[in-house]
Image (cartoon, rainbow, N blue to C red; front, side, top):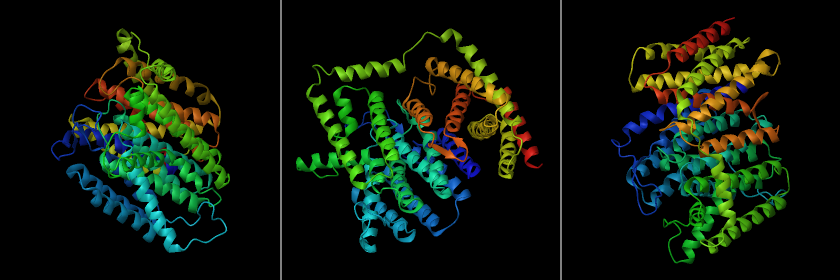
Length: 543
């Protein structure tokens, strides 16, 4: 389970990160650009092709690893249909009735064909809900969550980050229930979303569009239903409500305002919760941080209280809703006067990204990243004592792709090099983590290597331009994940490997991006180290 989960994650995040630079270049020619407007917070046209990368990045590993059951076929058909409708909407700005048709059809496919239905309802533990009503309610819920996430996609990184947290929580829950299929499903979604967020945090260079936001919303609802209704029926059904509670609260809050003003509940406006935070005085980035923090609190509460009574979880959620809306209303009344708590929080957030005059050391930090990354690739593969045949097969494919790509200097060859290095880095981190659990020299020196490269990459993120930027919403998410893992030992995603492995992989991905951002071609030392690592993996998989 650990190997298939890891490879699914690596394929998803690598494909997503590799495809996005290519998709950005063709976005304008295929009519997938998000233009500025009265309801938009961006001033320039932004490519709206992130949903394509998320879809392909997550679906490819599912096609490889998930058993081809009726549920899988229904899930794949539903996701494909929803993606196509979303892509259509991104190009043509569909009427909401046509969007609803696509969403209802996709939800019906999953519910009626895949039997992904809510059978255990909150407060109806001893009663049997008629199948027809249960199926209709499940379709309505899936459509509602899909639209909730879609409507919340108003700030850079917001919809992707909140969906990532919800899916991550349910993936951990699936791991505890030993549901291998849901682990693969969740890790593929996490990988594809992380790859997208690398380019979507403020200021975003790419948007996911409806193709991405609808898919993430639909998948968030689907994994919540499948885990609570199939993987572990002992879980409280209200856990899913808590995990999806923030986007659901947002959509009901916005629709209530629109109806009270005599407008259509689907009329666009700027009344969402994240817009309220902007009105209070938070900056774009700060508003995203605050929403992430709220979502983290909800998700952790749902996870800790997953076996609590439905009534207890409902009371907690209602208290949360009242407290959040009351706090927003109170802050809005005091805008421009004494919103000290807003200013205080802004000062805390500003300290996270405090600048420093380090430009004179830029070259040194690049050298450190190059050497440390190469060293990790070699040391990591030396830890591979017992290599699974799946690793060997993928290493052969990567080496076949990498060697010709070194000879050419174009966009495609750059993308192939990036993909090969991403996956190879993931392999060596896995081997090092396995070896580290057994103690020895690697257990002592591995944290030092990652500390050095992490510090060097962090400094370069602060002083370099372009894709290497200040502390971003993605960095905030990764730090939060690391903190959660340290507090909750149960928060693991693979057998014997905790989520720290994901953080280490992403650190190496940042290191690769730093070097890629500096030069059009990849560093020869890093390429040579990756080639050696792949050759060692191939040879040891044959033993």
